[in-house]
Image (cartoon, rainbow, N blue to C red; front, side, top):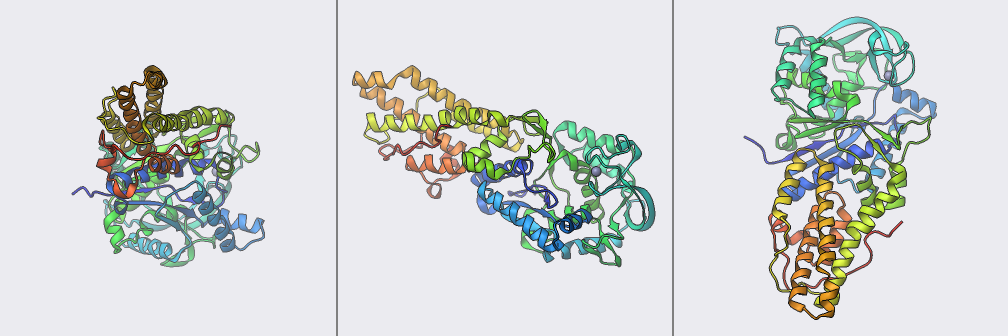
Length: 507
Ligand SMILES: [Zn+2]
């Protein structure tokens, strides 16, 4: 039976990186989807998980470079993530850290379970073997010769080290057919379609067994059946999606698993779309329903990098524009799922056009006309504007379930443009001079009702602005269900409205 719930995850962010606009991008998108679903199906049916990935050789190295103990180092950085998410109004329900006991317990439990499991071909899922290969510390992964550019890891620009170790292995190769079949049939649904194709082509090249433990990395979770080894950081990290909700017995796990969607960027596609599903198959745990893979972006046409010095701290955006506007500017740049360019140098233009002169100006126009022409009250009329709000909500609903965040923003801003044109064409100020009160009442009623809808439409994206608009219209979330919110003509005649201050100061 389909459970009426929504469980969404971001990847857990690696503490070796300080939080930047790239992390903020995925996290804001997840927040928008979580907020929309809370609005639609109720807060108790939604679970939004994010967190930090805190183990591995690279973390230990970074801690050492800063002269810190690994635990002190990861405490500090995970706190940084939490602070930044708070400033961006990220409404996560839980923040998992892979150094927490609740996580380590589940990781060990899964490893123990895999140790006694058999593959579909009847072999041991986990076995010990020696492997010699090229290891990139940056990726924390073995690389094949053909993955390198001029002998260097293309992502890290460093030559990998030759490493020979006896490790525990996961017999990934035995899951080739099952994974292929489940991904092809969308039983494991990978979105968008080009990413599904990419995963299937990896599988078609043949899957190799993978090391799941390391011998000389202390900063990790010990392998429960081999104290000499620690669990490979990637395997440890992936398990967060179930450890955080209390696998296997917690009510939360029973209620929310399988996840409705894991959001991820394409650099971690193989881990999420091949290794994670295979681990779940081997451990006989249900698969997540969907995996949505988004692209990379450039900043004003340039790759984001520490060397270029163009890494953007989300705090800077919040300080400059406020939380709502920062959220909007980050996610309004290009279609979610594709690669794109974030035009940072045009942020002030976009801010003025869409927020200050867009939603902000419309709200102020409509509310001041209500004050001027209708004594600050909702006139006694029925909605008769030529705008199909019902259809707009249907599109928005479909859009959010198809991850069409960018298209939904367009759709909402189209309503703003429609309303501006409506005002320009009906010219309430002329009707005011001519004292055509009936016509004025009708127009102002229509505009107030549209503004009420806009208040709800922007709720997942601009939560503070939404609250403010709805408050000025005398509407509050506590006495308004989703079906009331989206119904047409629900604004109550006689309700007092107030103009208030500008929602977005012009830059
Ligand atoms: Zn690398």
